[in-house]
Image (cartoon, rainbow, N blue to C red):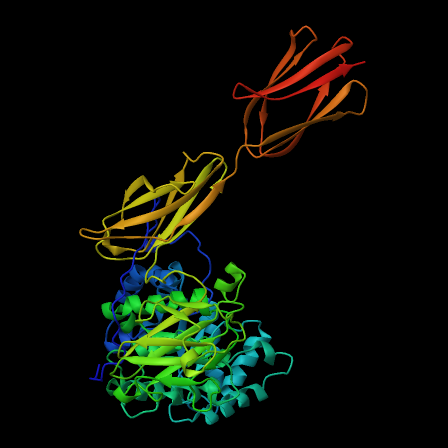
Length: 609
């Protein structure tokens, strides 16, 4: 890549993580996990960056890496054009991706001649029919009517892809791209238009990000009006945002792109974010990218509004105490994401607004910033979930001395960023192990996904009962070769009537980290009996409700205490009924008794008339 000024040096984040038992390698990714809330794309250069290379070696590479991409949250891989001579490799390539949980986005060149739309349609149909590939990205030069013609055929054949992206050309203005997208909609039937989202690459936003990262005199607040979503009537459903990409000239690549990524990965209103594979593979950036994606899934997904707090015409007041040192209103952006519908809000039952600050200056940022108070309470605290700031807790009384209500005070190191979430919450850890615990019968089933990380030797599973100390429960070796894997463990020693907390400890040669804690309640054993009249005087119906299963013994005693009948039977979880026939018993008074594990659990008087 060409040399560029550094954009986004971060303070390093220390983090902890997790553990468990049955193992599935990246090539055998068979256990389903909850679908990622937000789509994230990877853009790969692969054979395009090495002309003459065969596609086949990249199939093996993808087999090794695809599960890790999926674990990080990526859902699609943006592939370069496949040489015609290597088209036979496409089936193996798409199969390797799907085995890892990633959908391919295959390149189609834009038609160059008036009659060429027929070829575009034929190529798209061939991809769909031969390889089940529906998601497409189309090269620059596509006319709006070509795009509409392709979509109309897909609509008619009920084969509209989840993602279809066209490149309108890097020279178009935001207004020109919006006009182009609207021209596509003009040729789509009104009944279908609300369900179709033709996307375009957001070149204007990327150019603004480049300037923000590389030009000290650039007013970075222009980012608030540079992208297709903010500069036009288009929405994020019509755009793909990106920072670096193989289709850019090397001279325009950002050597350190993290400030730019922090913007497109934390603002869900901008569009579908795309990360360059080379950036993700970079050891300096990978954890930070994964951390932003995880924060997006937890705290940003489903947010319906963004407010740019320090845009030039904002009604929210700002006091930049670091202005004299160069960290002023033109070199930082601050925005607030509405948090009533996000996963964090749904889990807590309370609003979880998000505040993001990005400092593009070479000086530390110190700012008092008023927030949108719609979802706030005067005693709210915002917590730094990325660990990138010098102010881990933001309290709303910070602006009192400046006469600014609902304001917070923020400190950020030079050329850095962070995210704060309303209400108490934990740090978002890059590459977290995701541990889950669920009761299954009389045992607890634990499963966790571990990202591929070099240096992890083995895992320890720890358990705490009823809030006590954590004790080691099991130990197992990590998958070799830093492979992403799924681990399972069945805790068959859990006892009824206790609440258990589990965590995984991942051990390296000279370090370790913990997973978040997963908890499960083992309800106390409870079996209830109720005797009711039957259809005749000689019948009784014994109703049994139980949350456990196991053997039981029922005995009927006469008035002298002598056993007259005894029967072993099985109790199952749920509700059951047993019919008792009394016709063989002499008339008189009896006691019916039931024992479980040798202990009397129920008895009742029985009269045979």
